[in-house]
Length: 241
Image 1: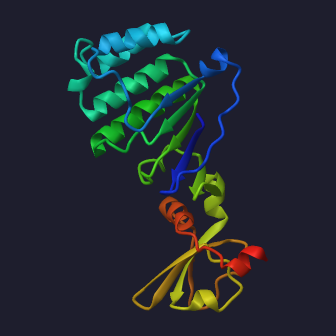
Image 2: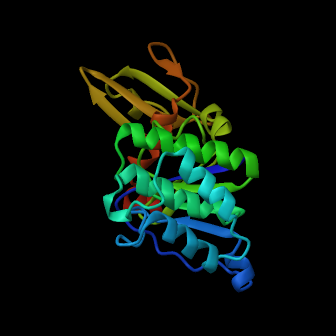
Image 3: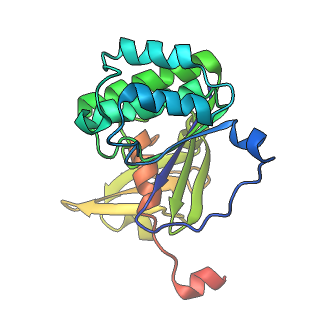
């Protein structure tokens, strides 16, 4: 399974529509929006039936079996479901569609910790079986580290970092030392934080090697993501250089 995590800041990027070959192309893509929109007055079984009519190749048996395993009654109305249950019904519709690519836009945003964990577990197991790729846009950094293998960090609508997570960690370092050390050498500082007389910064490994009095370590997943979300903005002169 290939899972791509995309972490967004508060600036919304402009996107161009992906090219598809009509209905056939759309049938290969599954999408879940942040609020997992479903028909609130419908019963769960009716929602699954609508999914079967709207999507060629929809696996109705898979959908019914999954809903049963989750303990969600097909006669229950969507409006009576918890946020986690609604997210699971939405995921069931996407999985039963047998899509090759899943686009998940902040599906964890409105879920409590247990519901988020269960959603990720279900998605991971299902996609491992089908081989579907997942583009997962989220601010929930810690819970995605264990399932992601490729990372894209967007800031102000622009890609600031992209690549295999293990390679990105190998190509960066977190360096800590006395306050001001980051201004003393030929460093390219991605981002820095100072406290209690010390400064800790994320730098590319291609920068100068840490010297005496400086501690160096590979970044954690959180440090890598948050470092680029908090990236130092270049001055106008530097931007033109």
